[in-house]
Amino acid sequence: MSTIAAERAPSRSRSWFAEPKHWAGQAGLWTLTAVLIAAHQGSVLTLAFPVLSIAVGLWLYFKSPARYVGFMWWVWFLSPEVRRLADWSKGAFTPTSLIQVAPLAVTMIAGLGLVRHYRVLAQRRGIPVLLILFGLAYAYLVGIVSSGVMAATYDLANWVYPLLIGFHIMVNARDYPEYRDVLLSTFMWGMLVMGAYGVVQYFLMPQWDVLWMVGSQMGSQGEPVPYGVRVFSTMNSSGPFAFAMMGALVFVLAAPQKIRWVAGAMGFISFALCLVRSTWGGWVIALAIQLVQSSNRVRVRIIVSGLVLAGLCVPLLTVGPVADRLGARLQSITNLKDDRSYDDRNKFYATFAQTAFTDVAGEGMGATGASTKLSSDSGELGKYGSFDSGVMNVPFVLGWPGTLLYLAGLVLLLGRTLRAAFRLRKDKFVGACLSLCLSVFAMLVFTNSLIGTGGLLLFTAIFSILSAAHWQKARRQSSAATLTGADH
Image (cartoon, rainbow, N blue to C red; front, side, top):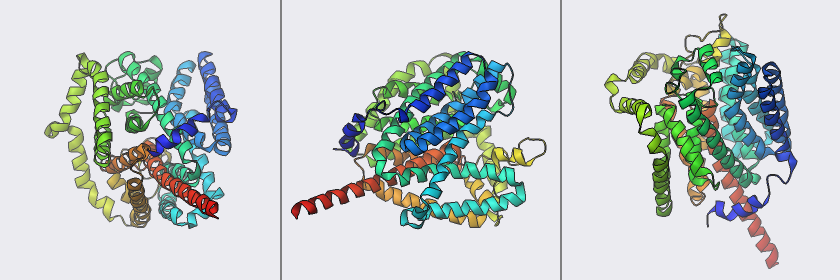
């Protein structure tokens, strides 16, 4: 019997509604948000949402740590849409909204774990985390000098918060079954909500999304018209949304929820319509890894699941303008000569490789990405605001000292993850996490998948596997101690 099967019954018996501390705060936040949107109180919502999100996050962190992780994911899933609805109810686009602070602030609450469990950093399981933190600290100090405190601090937060969530999962390994159940439930229901909304967005294009696309000048997301948009659903853009759907589609095979097939169909359609090829490739890699590591019985299940998803989705994806759009995107994968994106990436690698790998000190935090807005007087993206390659980004930002420390910690984590996963081959959730973390890591060629939604997936998957191994070891020791006591 698999670990999930063995533990599912007792974890299900603990009803989610049994204790209000698990759900009351979350229900209150989302209910109030819906009421304020319906009442067209966008200004009030802009102020209230981040404050209440942080309050609920703090409550859950201390009172229901596993639900805190689920809530954190929901805030990332939905807060961009809340921001768009707030702007729409006010009747004008807001370039910077306080609602944008909510997901980052809620996630950074996990940083309290470094203070509460600092002794873990000196243990064998905490050494990789400590190495990564030292690497980030070095780049932060360099970034303060080269880009300024604001830009460096914002960039540091984006690098460190995925690790903080992973650390939070690790120090609560005794509750591994609860974390597993919360993650699977969050991703299945999240895929259902975001997938269904993504389909609506593609075919109808709501006015609040139009307002945001026009105001933010997000030309990379396509045209703000039906059939013209690259689906981003409730999230900030198609990139983070594609990562979220990729993770959810990998978790489908481990999920017990009855809605997983409907959610999978909605998620797969929206995943296809976001037109993000790198995550398409990442998902294929994840499925291939699952097939390789699984037993014949599970392989059959994966293949059957794929056929079921195809049967549900193909009718919608192979007709009319949808088929034309997808066909053109798929053709660009095989016809690389006419692929401008591929050509631009090749040129970037050729011209920038020497700069990235010979800058020994590194440029530090704040040198690339959205953080460059904070280091310029105009508030616009800096020279390296758009940076497609994670392979280049890591040494360019962290420098040689930071890169060596960061990669040393990450390689240690991946090595332990692989060993633990092969010992727990019967745990379907562990198998899904292994395929997910390896595929996300492989995507460094296309984007910096160590930060943002990709980083959250990577470190959530890594530390979930390590927590599963720690939990199994504790159970064996407890059982052995019980048997020894019975013998005496």
